[in-house]
Image 1 (cartoon, rainbow, N blue to C red):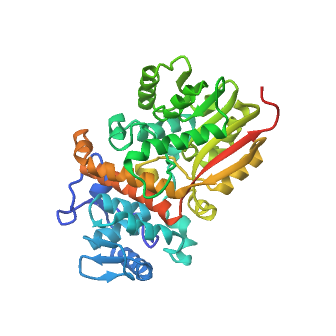
Image 2: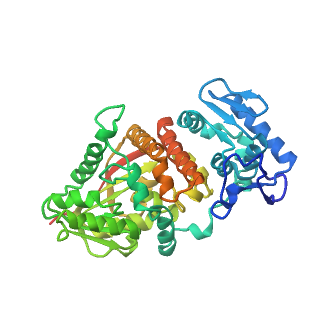
Image 3: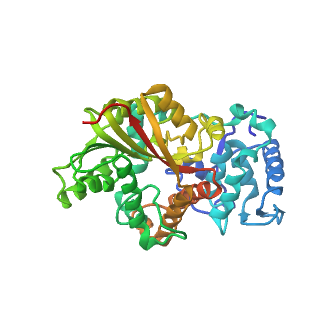
Length: 428
């Protein structure tokens, strides 16, 4: 939508636009408003009005204009800023406008769920065909080379162990749980996380004496649970803060003789293993390196070995349309991240390895409930988040991130899968 004129020059928000105070040093692109000309804002407004009129939403602008067929409400406090950001930065601008407090929604998840459900047809086909002209490209600095991956992972996972502990349950598990029924309840979240972990360990047939490679340690719960079964676990992570806490938990559990946690890239893995487990790590690999990732699994598994993966997925055509686009999530939450499709995973396994996709099961609604519990906990503990030094803009960013993710699963735009990959041969 910004192709009608050169790249705009950013300018500081005026007082009337600065609905939330923003630290320009920490959040330069939120604290400044792009200088979008009247034609850019007019085209943006026309495109948005066309889309919003057909959606089950109520979008109320500051001048009293209301669009939509009815449903979850969005209140746009500053129409000029809202249109300027979207007109120059698309969905990145939409997210930055929320971070700046220029729009709000009483039911943020509900509003974002409607938008996610219509993601494929919000922009007219004529503009979709011009996507490469107006969509921002992924920065070269965020490529998931070994050095780039370390930087990308640190950006998110080294924020603060204390921050994550505020909204995760006592298992410190940061991936989809598997519940027995809905609605999910916080008191059952830890058990639901153990249920998810046990399903993966069962898929990989992890038991006494199993040599297990884990790619992506998190804070160590899966390694602890595998070691408690009698497995010998080598776990790899790129997050120094996660490794420190995971090692402490391993020592406290008395399992240091069975668990080794290494600050190492998956491409640096050595040795061979009876089983491999990797939970929601492929989203940080990047399409360029998917073949390398799956070849690593193949090379590290013994004949007859089994790999159990958990992966967030999205529709294949949407993945193809957005795989080179720089997104709000990549800019602020997961730099270098890309969610694959089930088709992309299965084609990569087929074309680049001797592994076979033996089983796959999706459970997206369980992730929506997991995210709801995290989001509610994060909101309830906003004062404690602030006490850790995270400002209001950060808290709005994370509220949007958790709600945006939950909406993806509630709309069906996103799913989460557990895969079993097997390698022919006879296990030892």
